[in-house]
Image (tube, rainbow, N blue to C red; front, top):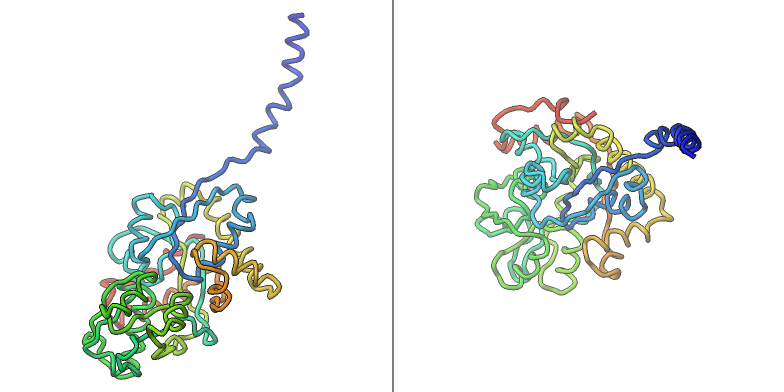
Length: 313
């Protein structure tokens, strides 16, 4: 019996030894997002199992204010987060060693899903009307704040004479209704809800002045996390790329909107109306350089970053 037991144990060794070759450990990632459709490719990747099939256990965590994402990534409460390019570059300029893992939405002149929404009765109709007014933005130094200031400057307005206050997207309607702000720089689906209720109106779809194919959101991680988890970082990017391909097929529009509605917590009738930014899963040096130049023009950077070092390979 002892001999048979020993032989049986030996016979089982090749099979046991082969198990690690087939087993694939799962990497846990907490991902931080804000309430905008630019994160659609991540939502689709989660809903379609693109992360799971790459052995990634991705937990999506809602973050109210975009500008707080880099600090959460640094603290490791998020492994990957989606700040706007300007928030990311400011955090790097401030000393955080973060890198871009993937991209999210990009600009398009066909998109009118964000703009300047003025309070009913405010009289704001053009850039010059913003001088001396209080305007809410969903993150000081974030995408909408920076691009709106660039638009004001292009219209001959000194943006330092505008009083900007930070306000999360879900608060925009209430702030306008209560008169706490004169206008907000907002985005769908919140912009549509404001205009549908009559609380405010779109004074300008200023976003159409932006060049095509510039990232609105980028997915970043700590450099040391990427160094320790290179396969996971690559797999995350590949999952988002697969989701982008899914999004680019018109037949999948309903599924994409359902994924957005699930994570932004808005009803189907609202989600059905919003425009969805085109996905841009890969971020290039040229795209980051555009943002560096824009921010330098607004005096937002103390140094000029080496953009090549800011993109994970």
